[in-house]
Amino acid sequence: MMAKSTPTTFPSWNLQDLLREPARDRDLLRQELEEQVRRFEGFRDRLSPDIPAETFLDALKLAEAITRTTSRLGAYAYLWFSENTKNQKARVFKAAVEEMQAGFTNRMLFFDLWWQKLDDASAARLLAAAGDYAYHLESLRRFKDHALSEPEEKIINVKSVTGRRALVGLYDILTSGLAYRLTIHGKARALTREDLLVYVRDPDARVREAAYRELYRVFAEHADVIGEIYKTLVTDWKQEHLGLRQHRSPIAVRNLMNDVPEEAVEALLAVCARNAGVFQDYFSIKGRLCRIRKMSRYHIYAPFREARRRYSFTAAAARVLEAYGGFSPRLAELAGRVLEERHVDVAVRPGKLGGAFCYSVIPGLTPYVLLNFKGHVRDIATLAHELGHAVHGMLAADHSIFTFHAMLPLAETASVFGERLLSDALMAGERDKVVNQGLLVQQLDDAYATIVRQAYFVRFEREAHRMIGEGSTMEDLCQVYLTELRQQFGRAIAVPDEFRWEWLSIPHLFASPFYCYAYSFGNLLVLALYALYRTHGESFVPRYLALLAAGGSRSPEVLLKDFGVDIRSESFWQSGFETIKGMVKELEKTA
Image (cartoon, rainbow, N blue to C red; front, side):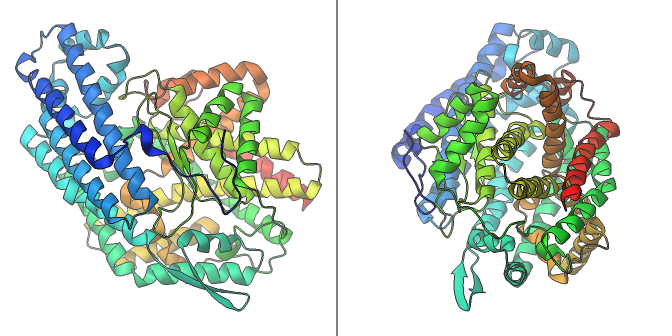
């Protein structure tokens, strides 16, 4: 059973499924991996266009076994580090594991490079016998025009440990350790970032403004260092992917990784920008509802109701499981397993990575969830979101480690769908018109944050990558970001100057360039899928579960065609905004 908890007492991770004694287990697994990789290297001389399918599959099975073990080590290292980025032992362990992974990856590179260069006829013969490995193999061949020589690939792998990955780690350590001070009711308080961000949703407009000012005051103080980290990461991306690998553009790299056509991404971003006015209208309505004299960026997350209900973690988990169970008992069962096996860490403390994530390690192992929990309704939504990621991975557990992870554009499907289930359940259980109005406001707040906001991050990234390549300064980048933000909000919502620093606080821009359009993709997609659910009822459920169970075994475009979705069509993406427009109109009727 799940341990009882209150907003100040939380469960924490049980990482015993991964490693029991980190140092000892790492050394034992290193020895096991050394033997397996040595065996894998024995396939080098057996690779030829006429290699027997059985031999080829033997190599793939061994590669999968090696990947499962290195993934276990990597997961433990990252999760331990995430618990407390100031923990020196965790940092040393993480660095050692990453160095080990790079070494083994380099010794196995020959196989992928051979496969990418294999002639089409021979590749087709082997693909026909590859079973669940097929899409993984097809994905490798997508990069054949961008692959380098084996020595070059090895150098990139080794240098990334002390280069790109080290810089991203430095960003995490620096930003998670920043300290803030805020005066509340006459008392100065020292706060973590997660503590501070609670106040951007405070009922008091002066507190919201003060919280944002403090957030960006601190980021501005560290802008030189954080900005240099970003510029170096962008330059690294350009030098490797455009200079060496000859990709057409910085974002084209991510599109190829996601196996999403460029036309689909362009259609998505164009429709998001064209519909920014939908949220401008919404925030104007919200301003009237919340009695805000002058609507500004300080106030877009203002709470609709001053009285804020608080939930214990146990109560929050129960609400999520109930919502999941109303859709599918199977979803509730899987989500409950994550909680019961102590694979959730919700303790808030200095040094812990901010935000929330779900880490699906290997097929068959219950995923791990990290989130910050203060007991608010929004925290319940975050729990529903992250448990959605978890059940997605668990439903796809029958696939190989190469194909059970959903491709990035579909990775948000189960999480956002879970939030929709929770929102509907909360609204259905309320008879108070004002409370339901507040829940609608929350849904629209979330829709803004996960659709248009994310698309504009990507719009900024495209400009930033171009500008840094042309030698632009930090001030230039900040001005472009502020201009984009003001265009996004229009004349009705003022954007104060300090928001020029906001982009420095967005981790995905540093760790995963152009990642953010996956949120826009996933949220608009879920609006379409949820509309199908409401239309078809129970008959939709098995089709939806099958989509999740497919994991990353087929391309997003192919998987979604089963639902009649054309991701290249602007009209499809626009249909999601039509649903949002309907929600805005529903709110306006009650304003």
